[in-house]
Amino acid sequence: MKNVLVTGGAGYIGSHTVLALVDYGYNPIIVDNFSNASPKVIDRLEKLANRPIKCYSIDCCDKKALEQVFVENEIFGVIHFAGYKAVGESVQKPLMYYQNNLISLLNVVEVMHEHNCLNLIFSSSATVYGAPKSVPIYEDFPLHVTNPYGRTKLMIEEILTDYVKANPEFKVALLRYFNPIGAHESGLIGEDPNGIPNNLMPYITQVCIGKLDHVRVFGNDYPTKDGTGVRDYVHVMDLAVGHSLTLKKMENCSENLLIYNLGTGKGSSVLDVIHEMEKAVGHSIKYEIVARRAGDIAECYANCDKAYQELGFKAKYNLFDMCKSSWNFQQKNPNGIK
Ligand code: WQD
Picture 1 (spheres, helix red, strand yellow):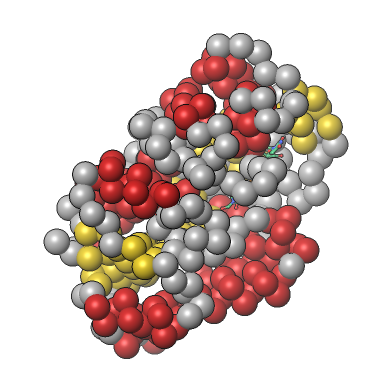
Picture 2 (spheres, rainbow, N blue to C red):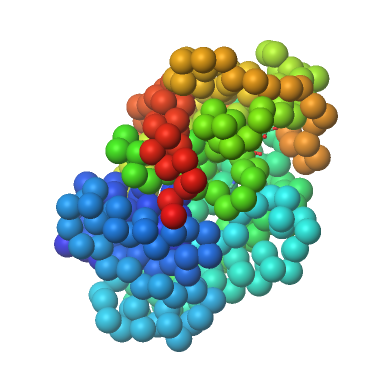
């Protein structure tokens, strides 16, 4: 089995991707500093995968420690999730974001180069498109970022583009996620943010479990179907499969720079999400329309034809499935994975 290093593999998307790698016949090896995930996730992954999963508790900013992983294991490819990802926090602490997100990436690429590991998937984000000129968004749309978090994503895309130009034997895939939500059907792993959630879905599930009083809808005066923000919500399990499909493609393709949107191709408003969630939980959910959140855009959803044609990627879960699985995870973990 080919070893695939998953940095940030105990995190929300990373942990679900670990399971999808096992399903596709890869051997995932996790690297995580557990700054934004519980070590308990590893036990739960081993239970779900029904096999041991090697995990190194290290920080990708520690190049020496990262190097040791490559000395001890022959790594076929790396999926790089590790990084800070809170938009608001990045505005308050830009240097922390530039240092952590850029140094960890540079270490990963340097160590891969030193150990002749030639396949890297980078966890990018639709945030690199900024406010799109139109929707749906295609991969060749202009890129524009408006916060330090998004800028680290764009800078890393540019660093990797330069790197593969200079090292054509190296292969990079940039996967631009839209809005990942949902959880594994077992409810053992899921989105488990520290503190008050920034993102919509974990905020709603905490209202449903009684930890928060009501949902604040950030504006209903956007030029959208019901005035609330529209996003392309994609089930994290679909997103996880997208990574395995990308690795399969990388094993058999000649191109060395692959760029894909991973979404559903469908836009849903905040009110759509709340209404689907009401169906999933079986009761109404209290919400209040408040002012827009600084930096939010009106509408953002993907065209995913390229991922479908080149990877065979097609999201199979709908918004209700995503809501049901998020709710199941929250019910099983009222205080998160502790
Ligand atoms: C979704 C919609 C809000 C919270 C961000 C990052 C992106 C990725 C996903 C990391 C918007 C509205 C939200 C709330 C609300 N992050 N909302 N009340 O902002 O689309 O994307 O998270 O990888 O890179 O930019 O996601 O879930 O915060 O917001 O009304 O309490 O829900 O205005 O329309 P977003 P989100």
